[in-house]
Image 1 (cartoon, rainbow, N blue to C red):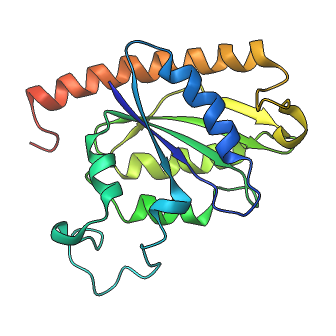
Image 2 (image 1 turned 30 degrees about the horizontal axis):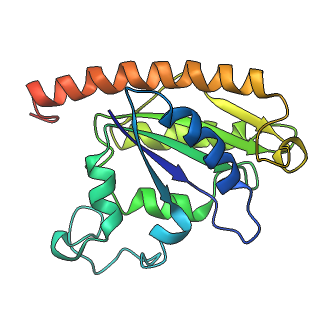
Length: 193
C-alpha cells in the first residue's frame, strides 16, 4: 500500500522534517507499506494562494498540474505530519489540500502532530473537519509529540520512544486496514459512481 507522508510545516528552523524522518523510518520498516514523503515546503512553492482564474475543480489544469498532484493521486493513504500554529495547522498545508480534490477521495488519513503542551492535537482536530469535506476519512488513533524541540534526542528520536512507537503502530494498523478496504472498494466500484 502506498502511503504519502506530508510534512506540513514550511517555517525556517522547523522540527517537522525530524519528526517525519522518525515516523517514516517506522512506516518504511513495515513490509506492507511503500512510503512517499511529500514536503509541503517544496510542493507548494509553485501553488499560488489565489485559486480564481484557474481551470479544474479546484484550479488545477490537468495538463500543467504540479508533480505533487500525481504523487497524491497515486497514494492509497496519507499521513499528515503537522505542527500546531495558533490552535490550528499551517497555512501551506491548507493550500496544498485546497489545490486538490479527487486525490483525497475515498482514502484514509492518519496524523502525527507536534507542538507545545497540547502536542499539536488542536491542529489534528481542525484537520479532522477538513478531510471529510474532501470525501477522505480520518483514522481514530494519532501520534502526538509534546514539545519535540526538547523531547527529541540528538538522533531525532522521541525521548519517550516506546510510547510514541506504540501510538505510531496503532495508527498505522488502522490506516493500513482502511487503506486496503477503501482501495478494494474503489477498484470494485469507482468512488462517486
